[in-house]
Amino acid sequence: MGEEYDIVNLIALGVISWTTVFLLVRKIFSDRSFELCNRIVSTIHGILAVILASLSVEDWSCPVCPLASASTPKQRQVLAVTVAYLIYDLICCLFDVKFTLDNTVHHLVSIVGLAAGLAFQLCGSEQVAALFITEISSPFLHARELLKEFGYRDTDLNLAADVLFAVIFSVARMVGGPYLTFVTLTANNPQLIKAMAVGLQLVSAFWFYKIVKMVKYKLTKRRKQVGMPGKLD
Picture: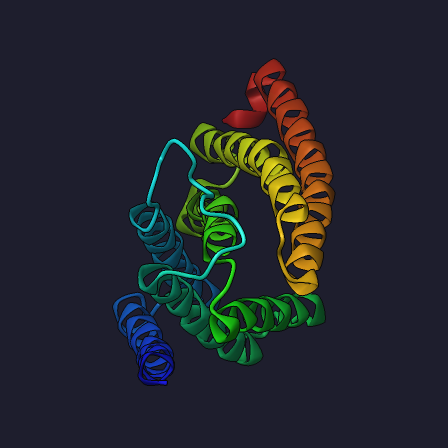
């Protein structure tokens, strides 16, 4: 009971901390958009989540082991930090002029899924591995948009960020993702965790398709620009 209370406190402290970081970023970049400031916070979370997830791995010869087992305190702390971030980001999205229903649903589903793992104290290895896979490409995703707002739209630097994001996303979601889904489904995990693993992989496959189209469009556009030097003056 005491440990559950500590996790709840950590989540509450985390929400306050992420909000404070956002307010500081907003003050520093007061002349920039609300979205840019939120993306900077999201980038910080992505980097922190990957570091914390890596530090929680017990055996790098099998990063998702032990399967279908009780979560360790370190794993629960990692998940709590991300739940706090998701709650902050959900609230932030409600104030953003670009509010979208699908993003809100994504946040709610993610919060419920991670909270369920925390409540039952199960599947810590699988959930932390999923967190690593989903967040490893996150900083590069946000870097693409940050570069555009800082005036680097349609530049080689922005194209490099697009390609780097696409490569990291593809390897993580379409190589690591299917492996994690397979071991999650074949282990003695709760049906909710199995359903979330399948759902995550289906969403990843959908975004992989969209990203391939995006990269193809960007490369084609860039080749046309190189072939027409006058357009770059």
